[in-house]
Length: 382
Image (cartoon, rainbow, N blue to C red; front, side, top):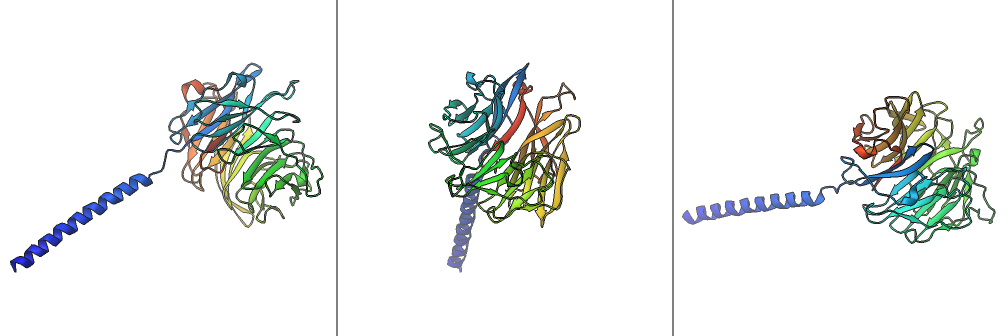
C-alpha cells in the first residue's frame, strides 16, 4: 500500500510538471505570435505662398506616434500625390509640381531603410509629363507608376531604372490615354483609369503590361467623364468609381463585363479614394466641399445594394484611405481652410470596428501645417 501511495504521489508531481511546462510553451508561443508593429506612411505638402513642398510622415506603431521624415532638397516646389508602403523598410512616393511650368519636372521618391533616407529616382526620357500622379509598390524590387497625362512606368530593379510601358492592344494599336488619376496592381494585372475615357475609361493588362484593352462600363450613357479611381482585389475582382457620380462599378470576371451598383452614397460625388478590403467590401474617402467637409464610408455591396457605415468628419475633407481588413483602416484628409484655423491643417483617422467609429490620431507638432493627401500601410490593400 505504501508503494502504491508513493507511485500516486510521483504521478501527481509529474502531471503538475507537465502542466507547468505546457503553460510556459503556450505563453512562449503567444509571445512569438504577437503581431509586429504596424508601419505606415502618409504624404502631402506644405503651402508657402504659391510654392509647395512635399512632406512625408511615418508611423511604426500603428499610428500611436507619427514622425515627419527628412526629404531631399530637390523636393522643394513639389506636392505629395501618392505613397505606397511595401514593407517596414521599402516605400515609394509620387510627387508632382505645377503643370503650367515649362519643365513640368516632378519625381518618384524611394526609401529602402524605413525612411531614414529618401532618394529621387531618375525617370525615363520621352514622357508626356513627369507629373507622377500614382504609384504602386509590388515588392522590394518592383513597382508601377503613372503620370497625370498617361505615361505608364515600370521598374523591376528597385527604381534604379524605370521604363515607359507602351499601352497597346493585342494588335499593336496604341490605346489613347489622356488623364490618369489612379491605378492598381495585383500580380500580372494592372488597372489604370482614364478620367477622359468615358465608358471605356478602364484600361487593363492581364499579362504584366505586354498588351492592354479598354473595358466597357455599363450605365454610362448620361455621363460625360470616365472613371477616376480603381481598386483591384484579385485578377477577377476590381472596383471603380466615376468623376461626378456616386455609384460604384465592379467586375467579377477579370473585366469582361462591368456592373453598376443600384445604390449610391452621394449624387454628383467625387470619391477621392476607394480601396476594397475584400471582394464585396469597399472603403471610400470622400473629399466633400469647402463648406461641408467629407466622409469615410465602408460599403458592403450585395447584388448591387449598399450596406454602409458612413461617418462625416467636419471640418476635414477626406483624401486617402488604407484598409488592413474589413474592420481596420486608416484615412487622412485636409481641413477646410476657412474653418477653425487653429486646428491642425490635416487629420489622420483610425477605425477597428469597420468604420462605425473613427479615432483621430495625434499629428506631430512640426507637421500641423501639412496638408495630407494619401496614406498607405504595410500589409494593407492600398
